Structures are given as structure tokens and as C-alpha cells.
Image (cartoon, rainbow, N blue to C red; front, top):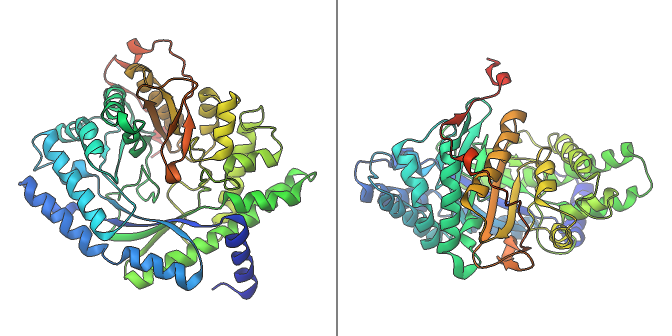
Length: 454
């Protein structure tokens, strides 16, 4: 339980430092919704989601009122739909029917987003998985709150380059289909390596096949709290700096633990994990970039940025893991360009480049996230970017991801508006030197040798 001192500190963090719980996410298994008839599957999906999650939003709002803790989003994740629809779906259009069922169900229960229109193809694609991937341009343009992910590689299996090559074309098609809204459909899609089964954040959240029938996962936030705490570290050494970040992460995670336990108790669904990631917003003072700059950088992207991010990520985990019995998901520091005011400014000034962001992903929690690029970027170049990021995850035994938006009709010097938590982003230049002969070879990149530690 929180003591009175922690209550006072929590109130201060909420009122002055932009602390919030970013999401309560209910994971729901849809494996028992499978059938040979696609319409029956769609009905089963709608019925199960609307039954299990009918009280999710109301419960989240009640916890907000009772504890005074802002909960920004209520979300749902489901079993990867490529598995649920494998027997019933004979075409990509059949999978689109299931996307619409997810969208209707999520809107009925009032959540902000639903994730799990996904496929796990780290070694190769089944026909059903390929059909789902090919359905993405239509599915993501015709639905509003459905999010999708494709896991293209892992440390144990290598990288499925057939899927990587296909995704370059699919992302271009998603961008074109949602061209009237700054290619917003790409905001709802992410390509993963080593995707976790219990991620409560979007667009990459899905309910893994190792999970139970239903679970409550919570994602915390709090870069503003860390930033304010770092005001006390100016001129102090790294020992004092690390201790400050660690203590602050502990306090932030304690709030998430309280919310998770309350949501679990009230909904009668088991508590899964706390994802203790520092998740920024476009608001001033709620920025991971600002934290890095207070550590000592003139601007994000300067020499030393990767080292500062590595240290921040490690201290967040060391502090947060002591505050919760179960830490999972991604857990660390997010660096989404469009969702972080200081990252946006650094990218706009040319200080932060895609190449520097790629280096930073070696030590952060996710990867290349919410990056807007010219709409005429080739499909092969996008595939090459995905392959590079997947290789970082594969070799380093960590989760990496790519959520990239080729904004149709726009180029360097323009900006894209995504709205809400998704923010806005300057169009960043991309190295256009061709990698087509590489990404079109076919087959898969084998797993690194250390993956055979069995």
C-alpha cells in the first residue's frame, strides 16, 4: 500500500509533472473464436470482446476518480488474428471482415485502440499470414482504431526477408490508401523483431499465445516527472544522476502497480504486467528528449546521445523493477519522434537524423518509432530500414521495431499532422541509395550463433 508520504509525492507528480498512467490494456484470447465460417468467426470475436471488456472503460474512469490518477487510454489486445482466422479466411477480403469486427467491438465498449490484427512470421509466412499482411492497406484504411503488427524476426529464428520485402510494398500501399489524412494508416502499423507477448502499448500490442484467457496489463509514463527530478542533478556526478533516475522510476512504477491491482480486482481478471516505459507526449514538459538534454546534451542527436539514452534506460529498469512484482512488455524509454516535443525540434533542426535514431535503438526499448519520411521513398528502402532494425534486435537479443510513415505527397521541409497522442512530425530525409538487390534475394537471414544456447 502507498503511505502518506508517497500519496503526497504522487499528487505532486500528477499536478505539476504530468504523471499519468498511459494505458490500462485488457488482453483477450480469441483462440476459442475460430471456426470454418468467417462470418461465425467475426460474430464470435465481437461477442467475446464486448462481453469481457464491457466494463473496462467504466472501471478505468472510476479508478481515475477514486485515486486522482489520470489514465490516458483504455485499450484491448487480442490473439494475432492470422491465427484466429486461419481456418476460415480464404482471401485477404475475409481477413478484412475480421478487422471490421474488431473495430465494431472496440467502439462498442468505448476503448481508444485495439491491437492484434497481427501475424508472427519470424521464420516464414503461412498462406493465412500472407493473406492478412496483404489485407493491411484495406483493413487499416477502412477501420478507425484497429492496430496491426507483424513480427518478422527473432534471435532464435533469424529474419524472414520475404516478409520484410513484402512489408515495404504494404507500407507504401497503406500510405496511399490513407493519403487524405497524412498517411495516418501507417501510424497504426509496426514491424517487430522479438515482439513481446504482453505489450500494452500500440500499435504493437497483441495478446500472445502464451497468455491466459484474459489479463490486465498497465503501461505507465512519466518523462515529465524524471525531467523535473533532474533539475536537482545539475553539476552533480553520474552516481547522483543515476540514483535520482532510479528513485524516480520506482515512484512512477508504484503508481502503475496500484492502478493495475485495482483494475484487476474490480474487473475480476488476473493482473499481468507493468510496462514501465517512459512514454512521451507532444506536450511541453513531457518529453524523453528533454530528459536527455537535462542529462547534459545541447540537443538530442548530439554526440553522447546514445550513451545518455543507454544510461537512462538502464536506470529506469533498475528503479521500476523493484516497484512491481511483474514487469514486462517493453519497459524502458520510448523515442517516438512525432510524440516528443524535443525530438520533433531536434529532427526539424537536422540535429537528429534517422541514422542517429538507429544507433539509439541499440540501447532503447523499441526502435524507429513514429518517423515521417518522404512519400516517394521506395518500397525497397523501407524494407531495408526494417531489415536493419530487425538485425539490431536479432543480434542483441532485444525487441526492436519500425513504425515509419511515408507521407504521400510530402517531402523534406514539410510536416505531417497525426493529432492527439500521435502528435506531428517533420518529414525526415532518407538515404535513397538502392538496396533493392539485397532485400529481394528471398529466403531468410539465419539466426546468429548465440541463439543456440539451449
